[in-house]
Image (cartoon, rainbow, N blue to C red; front, side, top):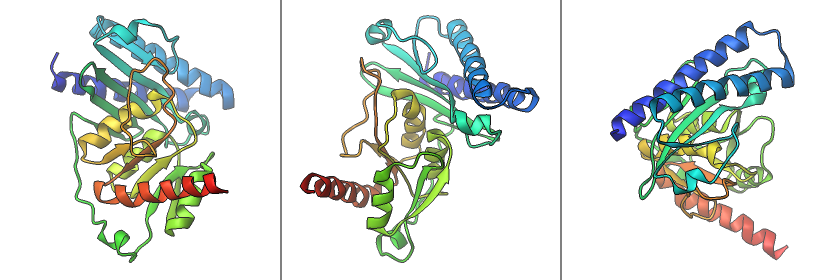
Length: 258
């Protein structure tokens, strides 16, 4: 398989899962936790079946499936979140997403897609956008930070206060990252805990669009590790990375001195 073929498959699978989830969301009488669980299960079944049929030799790491040692020896691992933003899905909102990414040994993330109702962002069709960040750097307009609408991390509130930034609440991690890709917000900073499946596809798409992606301390994001816990994330235009990482480091230094 070529990278182009894998990228197209990631986009197709994510879009297909969103279509199935939209139908469930519209037609089901389920509410709350029951609807969340039904959505997770339906998307997991669809993605697992498609990957088993179309990429039978590849391993899969999914939030909704049991993990095992096979992926650690595999050269190709699909990292999927069948439904990111279950709260938003259960409330019949549209700021939830399906994440499909491919990790390859020796290279890292090579393909990915984030699909939401009405949109598919994918490495198959990268959309690098020129960002006018000079007004932010000059202090002529506030920085816009995507933040969880239901569980905003304390770090982001401190960061916004330190930088005089505006916070823009929205749903899933994929939706927040794609808001940076689209230029709706300037950055997405998360420090409240995530797993590899929360960020793999969003990071793949963000990188294809020319954005900076890293841990809070600037370290590289590493995927397909034995422990899928990957708790923090920064996504922004490269020109803003220094400003954000320095401010985050300052917050951490202040906490250590307190």
